[in-house]
Length: 321
Ligand SMILES: C[S@@+](CC[C@H](N)C(=O)[O-])C[C@H]1O[C@@H](n2cnc3c(N)ncnc32)[C@H](O)[C@@H]1O
Image 1 (spheres, rainbow, N blue to C red):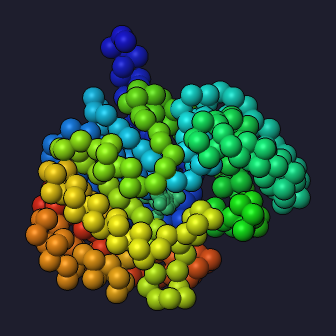
Image 2 (image 1 turned 60 degrees about the vertical axis):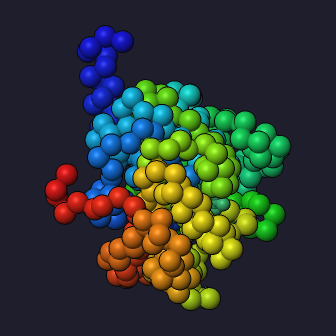
């Protein structure tokens, strides 16, 4: 690659930011999260990718250059969208421009037409490929981005049949096709040679090498039995999975990986990370940090709550690194 091309790519990487809105997105917590970026690490893995706020932040700072990067999520629509943006951004943009035009002229009538007559039927017809993580249609990715930018609160909600059923949001002029950012995202995913994987977080224990930096952002443990939003996919995320995740984080910490986990401050997470000897023995420390986030299940009401950042990396002072 010529020097000029290399520096153009660096500029694009520096500007790439999340292209989806995602429940539990960590953009607002970045100033706190950055304090735990390890000074050195060999590779980066993020098994609960969502909109990838931390991945894009690390990439924009050049902290992933020359390193292996592995991004994972159990949501097939999400992983297929990243793959299509990485490999086929021109086609994604062409479809997205048409969708933006349709939305401008017909609004929510167009939204429901896309959701019910195109997006869900195509998803159903590709069920087998999607389950194995091999489908990456530019048209589906464009519809995913369009629906995400125009649906209620950017929620990705599925009904019992697995169909996307979030209603239309009420936005006067939503940004549907941000061409510059999607091109920047495509370049950053390509230049870093990002590996995208569909699957359960547990696979990370075989995939991440010692010395890796692994950031875990699972669905929040419920603050109470009724106030939870954990149905990112049709299956949700159980207390037992939170326990398995804690054990995995402990295993990686014992294997000299740099780990960082964010989660709600809830009775379950306090037990798993704050009062647990096992976690402490592995060098994990829980930090309570103030966060603003949706505090009810439909995301319509926001408030200030503490969240956990759990890590075996010593945090730097604010603005220290
Ligand atoms: C809190 S969100 C991550 C948000 C992300 N950090 C961001 O900035 O947007 C949790 C993610 O975990 C994914 N997920 C849920 N259960 C999972 C599992 N068992 N294995 C891997 N990913 C899972 C969801 O699809 C969702 O994208």
